[in-house]
Length: 264
Image (cartoon, rainbow, N blue to C red; front, top):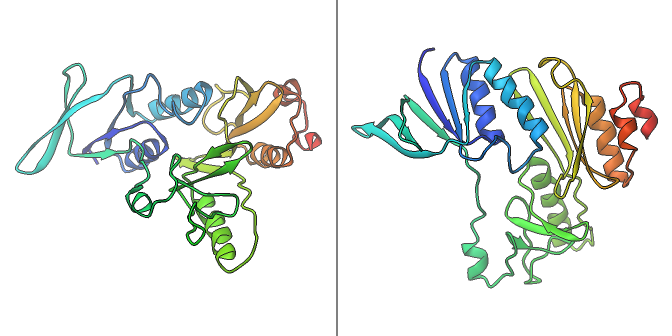
């Protein structure tokens, strides 16, 4: 208790680290260079909900603030200088700013690269004797190529690749899902929100961290993804709808009187 941690990066890794640090009674400063946290992965509504959560737990959360450099003595960090010149003290620093796949081995092997190691629907690379799976591999999905960084995808894709190495012809059909635990809050995500143009809120976003709320992403009339906060029912219904290619009326989703199961 009382030690000071600086967290660089306001993605899920950084936010989860902040939650753990606060539960251990550390003083936490989190800086995010982008205008808001979760800018790459979530809508503004989800980001605002989690920003409020962390501030309620006394995280000094600074959006639109970059890191200029770390400072230290005798090989140990003692603080940081933020963009703009402000100096802050820190006993240790956690950096969670994302990763990029290491393509050097794949490139040396002459494999096709497209946002990772490019594989087909059977997880086979451009070399028919080599398969790839997990965070490093991009694959065809709903008319475009995607690369997923998640435990679920690594397991499912790895199993499909292994089966196909053994002679099966098993199509890999991704069913994207993710989760994040912060304090006593559970966020469950179904689908991919890329290309959304509308967000529908179900529940009261200002009702507090224990109240269920969900954010539903649409592109036109098509349901793409759901962020469900403390709302496992919304997550399961949304996941089933997305996997079935069904899109409920947004007004019905937003109506608190709608029984979500009836949408199935």
